[in-house]
Length: 285
Image 1 (tube, helix red, strand yellow):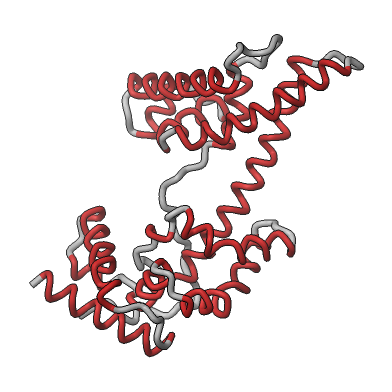
Image 2 (image 1 turned 30 degrees about the horizontal axis):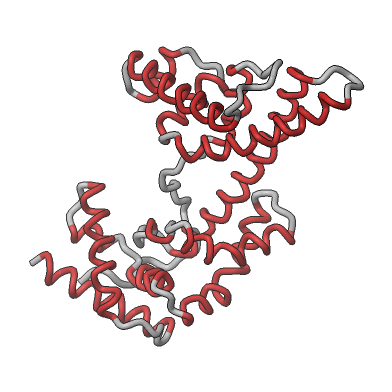
């Protein structure tokens, strides 16, 4: 029954997408397995039945996303024609300038493919709404990183540079740049929970017991997460400064406070209501 239900849902999604978007140039057999896998993944993650998942799936949008992922030139053209202008507006709504917003919107398709992020779209909500969230997060992340790079420079400056010392000024700039590079690497190595605990502790200054309560974990679990994150920071600093850290060097607490903005949550974002979107058009057999 499950296989037949998924087959019927895929055919409904294919028909709806082809009616709306035309021939996407990808054989249906190439997309069927991925379509079914996305549905089953959502069912497994949420505990919902296949019927419940399909009823809430934007089948036509999921089919389009799969065709795009499989290299359909027609799907890429649809992205530019249908979504790009709305993504520019979404980026501007988060404070991006027009030129930056256009660059983000135009570069988003390639980034989603290169990062394998498009595989996270499972048809829950419209593709338009999901893409808006993706571009908005890039604006927010870029602003966080820019601010953190400035903060890192200030932290290093306070630790290293007496006024008017040109040699130490050059050392300050070199150390700051190395720390920025280390921060990017550290952000990729921390798990989402480690990242959150470290943000609460060092950026927000929350007591350990409060952190444990917020995350519904034990105090000892918070201690382990802080320890794991701190060891990753220490390891990254050893790789960044193999000859030993320059002296004087910012304290680890000061580093954590500024590095906090690099710790981006890599879980799927909560999708905002997609006002004005049509209800699901395909996916329910």
